[in-house]
Image (cartoon, rainbow, N blue to C red; front, side, top):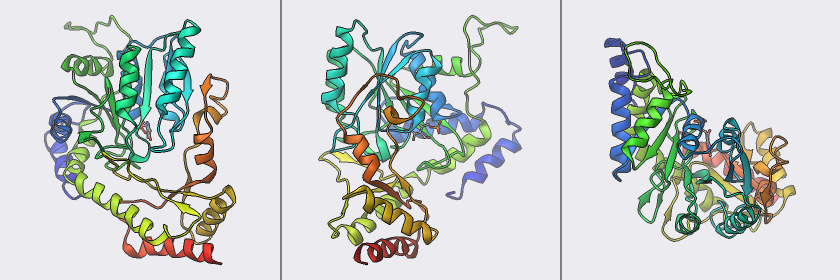
Length: 363
Ligand SMILES: Cc1ncc(COP(=O)(O)O)c(C=O)c1O
């Protein structure tokens, strides 16, 4: 926590706004809008997953539709496709950002069109905070008139050619889960350039109640709004977001300085014009064996790491859906590792991890 969160939470208690609305919800939305400063509108929700669900709904996705989704991501990027009775179609990654491959995206769209199934939306993800190739993806999306849902759950604080991640999609989402760069313990946001989309999102997120003195409903709604108590945490967290980004980037630079001289280890560079919040510090190794050697030796020292995301097309629950593959995400899953990356790590913690890796590679 940054320090001022409890002040805002106390305000919620003092004013008795213990509800999914109140001054903190409005204040948190204003703070995000000011930060992203791109004439955008933010609806604070209960999770990033809820935001993706509502986002897809607002893009018109429904039963029987197909949605193209980056395969190399967390399952929450794709789960909401199935909540709507739609089918995910998975697209592999390119090497430069580890995100959705523009080349494969276009191949997939052409193939789906040939099969007379025009995809209803594209879900592109800034994985680990690294922006996806927005210009290329956007050009393809425009050419085929398919909207993009920008999954910026991991990328608050990242920018693409000076534009903030979270403002690049037709609809964008953020997550404030406990593991994210800033947190409300659990929470998310839906972002749009169109104020009406924000209003519709809030309408759907508060049980779709019609304007009447009694309870009247013409649509199926959800209970997806953010609590005013948690939004108080979010207001405090927004005050330290820049510090958090700096700390995460420092972690990455530290590991890079200590370890990049090893031939077995590679770090993902920021392509020109891209700025990553380096949410997690990730490495790739020269083989599955090296990755496992590093992972298990750190575990023996009680240092937790995690292989990179298992691609969704390999997940038991998604494996039978269509996919367009080039081997990139499968390889990254085999050889990649997320190192300890918290914003509160001390130099001594970072040293302990990197020295253990050095010891392991020079043994
Ligand atoms: C890429 C990605 N998309 C979506 C989500 C879902 O966000 P939440 O956990 O807030 O539902 C997460 C994180 O959990 C994520 O990492």
